[in-house]
Image (tube, rainbow, N blue to C red):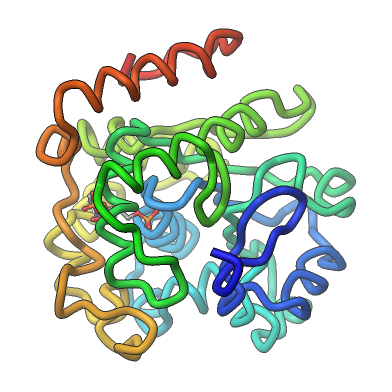
Length: 285
Ligand code: A3P
């Protein structure tokens, strides 16, 4: 861990993608009230939401959207790639992404109070997706067996820290913040209704057929085949998709194929304990 990760405010971050310069850039970033922030714990549907929001802000026109990757169009602010994008000069509304916890956001974020879309996913599926992702991403520590990775995940000793802390931080955000909480499971259950929900939150009026078109573009198979979104041009040294694809399965409940019954029980026990003070009713509960 020590070799690949740096500790930032008590959370592991990959050194390869979060350099001291990029963390400084993140801390000094000037937010605007009309920015659109996508906040997630990894593997919760980040890329899905980045693409959906980009299509919504472009009135469903995929031509400009598909000229840039998610990391250029809706960059992760704390990753080194963001520095070179001249975000200060971008017209509003800028679409920005972060995997940071709420309490790790910089001062300017709390002053500008931009809209935030927080995407969450059943943590057992997050764990499963993250386990597979760790086998292909060179900036992450090799996960070991699934039971080894399970202990690290439940202890928060993984890149981006504890899932529990992450979700609790965003759920306990100041009530003056404008945050839309939406789940991966909701997106899966009804993509068009989710497009409508996100568009309404962004105060974007779209015709029914435009929303239909956006939902279609956001289908798993369409994004998987889309060269701009499927990371096929990302160098193999970063992401080795010969083992498993970034667009892996895109389903709800794949944890059942990875966790043994007693591991799932252990997961649930930890979940119940760590989430006991959280009042939010999650779709997966
Ligand atoms: P799986 O590994 O379970 O397949 P993130 O973008 O936050 O890294 O999340 C990646 C996960 O979201 C992966 O989950 C990926 O397959 C899934 N995903 C991405 N786009 C999707 C889509 N259009 N429909 C369903 N799942 C999608």
